[in-house]
Amino acid sequence: MDIAKLIAEIRQFSEERDWRQFHDPKNLAAAVSVESAELLEIFMWLTPEQSRKLPDDKMQNARDEIGDVLICLLNLADQLGVDAVDAALQKMNKNRAKYPVDKSKGLAKKYNEL
Amino acid sequence: MDIAKLIAEIRQFSEERDWRQFHDPKNLAAAVSVESAELLEIFMWLTPEQSRKLPDDKMQNARDEIGDVLICLLNLADQLGVDAVDAALQKMNKNRAKYPVDKSKGLAKKYNEL
Amino acid sequence: MDIAKLIAEIRQFSEERDWRQFHDPKNLAAAVSVESAELLEIFMWLTPEQSRKLPDDKMQNARDEIGDVLICLLNLADQLGVDAVDAALQKMNKNRAKYPVDKSKGLAKKYNEL
Amino acid sequence: MDIAKLIAEIRQFSEERDWRQFHDPKNLAAAVSVESAELLEIFMWLTPEQSRKLPDDKMQNARDEIGDVLICLLNLADQLGVDAVDAALQKMNKNRAKYPVDKSKGLAKKYNEL
Image 1 (tube, each protein chain N blue to C red):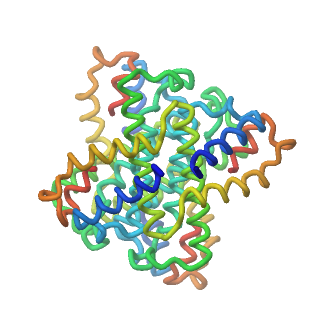
Image 2 (image 1 turned 90 degrees about the horizontal axis):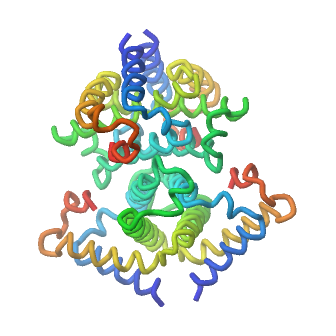
Image 3 (image 1 turned 90 degrees about the vertical axis):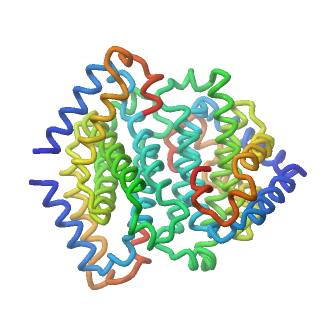
């Protein structure tokens, strides 16, 4: 439900502002990277432990940046005619085949090549 | 439905492999950036027009990388206790307020500061 | 001359502020990515032609962000005991071998896999 | 010396392969981000301590990726007519003014906004 609503809102947002012209897949892929880096910036210089217990203001920033990454990613997927959730479910199948439980358990080394 | 299924699969995947220990929010935010760059790489050196008409092999790569970004993003959101779709819907409200239709129409300059 | 001066300034800057404790290679690699995305953001939504003729304010931003990427990269290299210019010269040797002139001329496709 | 030699090699490399046509600043800024993410990937899932003591194969990867980021960054700077080392030295001046020693000592919080 909600993700269909979100995609509809993203489309309407772009169309009302006449921004489709800027939203070619190449530009949107760059936007995903830029928004992802803004998300990463929130965690910079924190210890892993600190990253698990964000103070309220940083948690709100993280919510906003997660939102921005998802908006740009769904916008890109929409332009390419890709169902992002479906693509992720299919990728999960590949990941399960690539990292069998009995060979991957507890090993970051394997995961490193995901 | 599907996104709840995807989140459940992501949880099970990590737990079966005992990878929760590596999945602190800081590491997952870095993973989102790394996967986003792999997505961006597909479009590098293409013209905007070429990026709209990907050949089949690049389109499949794009599907896989969109999947990977979404998997990492939902994993991060889950670790933070954030509903990613809800965060995006709320961010859309902020974006609409920040870029009023009558002041933003057709202007990439404004959007640049999103 | 100048690059040695720059590395010396970066060291002094960190030491005077007692920031060496935060500057493990993992954190600095994240900083390089974050600063690179700020550099990329300047060019987002521009056409390739516009990116060649930046207005003065964007050009100054680009100068600053190029500076930040270089500072973080040299800081990281310094922590790892790597001479960045030497590493780049050696990588150029690899690149020349990987992309022979007669097979690469004018082909973005090849370069795509750099 | 060496950095001038490196810039000369980067120019010759592009010209011999007729790749200048792809090297508009927008594309090169994307390349800097993509190469930076490949550098970051080496450190993913490592603890901060592990990132200080890379095994030989990862150290060689790090050298190569530091080289690639520097090559792309200098190529971009060259296309913009910017002296990257000079830009970094000037940015250091701004950083020193922004983070006075007596207010920044030992505080990651401040540095977070660099």
